[in-house]
Image 1 (cartoon, rainbow, N blue to C red):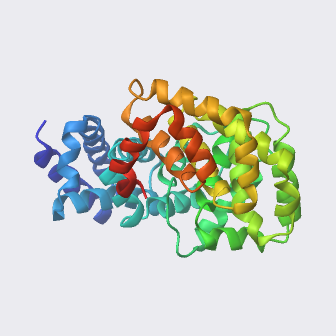
Image 2 (image 1 turned 180 degrees about the vertical axis):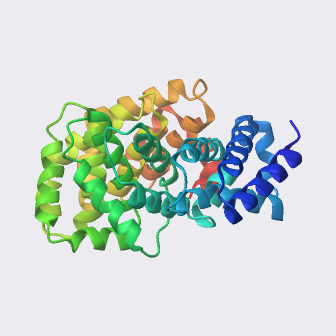
Length: 340
């Protein structure tokens, strides 16, 4: 497939449809969107979009504009979402879509115009893309459409569908972490006490990943509220650390990443240090990692290294670590600057 020709044809079709939204122009745009989906589904073709150029920038802009136009035909959305999912498989494009094109804002705008019907497959598809794009995101300001998204996600916690509860909590977890604007917005809501109560009640569920995402949200907003001291008791911390260690080895990479992030956030607090030392599962976890280190994919290796780096600030734990896996410390030195 010739990337230049396919992208050029798509941009031309998008320009033509923007000027004259006839049925024939719509069908032409749909056909070129389908070709773009096929093109971007092959990883080797993504290099075309990683190279800064006017054509690649125009292409991505047109894909995102599909979500921003309130008059956009519904038939275009699934194809545009598939293209975004293909882009998000590449780390460079992932960051570019976050920082330059603000895809999260475009998807929020679409949901505001389209409405959120939890039984609509299109809404679920959109939320799944948001679940990916909002990881490690930096949010400096909150628009009206983004406020709407946050409130929709908070309301979705009450749905009876576990999948939607999990997705909404995961997106909120991503949005809250290291984003003071989002944290303060949620903490200023009149319904904050009810939100916290819902999140605490979720901790009684039987789904580990859902518990993890609820804990991550509570950890992010706890510094702004008095309930933080009540929540993170020694007993609750021990239970949380055990859950994190359990999910560190789950098959879901995004869930494991959230587990490491929550662990990193919790261990930075000196008050939590004694609980880490007391954890009977910590040394077992370190041994398990050391045995499987050479067998796991590179993404999981990075997570394990982040987990170890989070522990290097505690001499007692570091000493225990050194007694049975000195070679891991050598590996950590080579990764330290790229991961921090």
